[in-house]
Image (tube, rainbow, N blue to C red; front, side, top):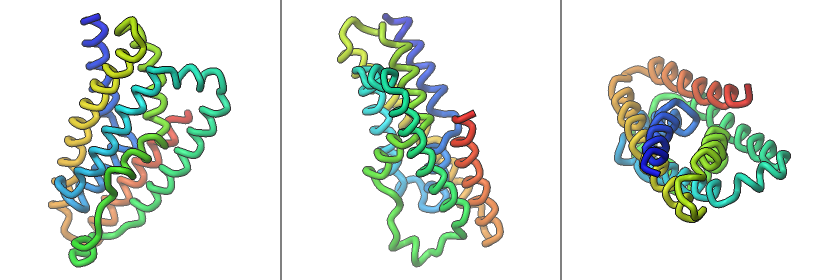
Length: 198
């Protein structure tokens, strides 16, 4: 079991730090609002991954494997939502200090929802749930272990992305720079969704 747990930690670290829709969104929020104001969204995404991992390990993966059309439908809806987010990020301009001061970034609940609509997260959860089913004899214990490992890894990885976004935001001075950065983040979000289907 210790070897499987170490493997789960390494897999979680690698899967959560790699670019995907959630990491790019967190970087964009960090650039626009800073680290502290992005924390509720970050916490929601990490909690969403923990819950998704627990559900997959507890048996959701079995249901989705038995009904493949449901998995395709969920991926389709999630992809459409993430592409819409990519469009919104890509089309946004520079922050308006007055408007952004009053505006609130996405919070905890949107982070939870985003994660459950993220095809990368579903692929990660279903794969890890099946691969690490042998972490413990009891499925509930496996679910709790994977939730803790992946939730913690996501919180740490997303923090890095958010800090990176905040650092980028401090360096952008002109409207043109903001438009280029937002366009690049939008394209990265869209590309990460498209790559999941290839």
